[in-house]
Length: 141
Image (cartoon, rainbow, N blue to C red; front, side, top):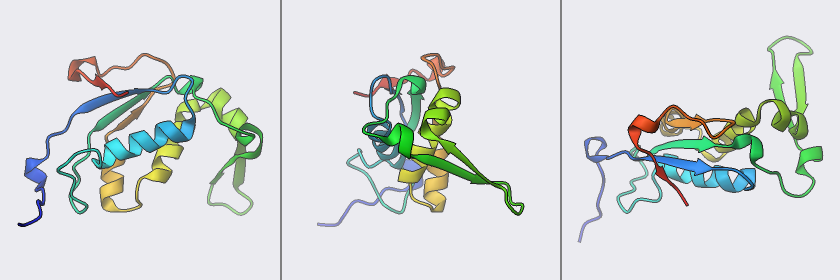
């Protein structure tokens, strides 16, 4: 018996909505990364991008567990000398909750061409409003 290997032309992509309200950021990110890679499908093939489109809503209502709000930091660099900027998780959730969720999901997707391609199918929104109703997304539980 031979193993099934999906071809890029065989991949059928679905749309899923994940509601992050009241859920830990890491749990939501892990689910989103699994859906983006396609690991929930029985036809998953590691060398083929077989993931789905993912919409994450209500990011501003997601929570950090433990002391992460005070201890976790986000860093970015301008490229200039002394250009390192630091933002606490509390400030990031207050101003850019969707960016915090995006960075959590990005950290769980592989740093390869397949991972970068998967991140193009991710949409993250602060509120419950999204503009993808025409795609008839299913709610992921």
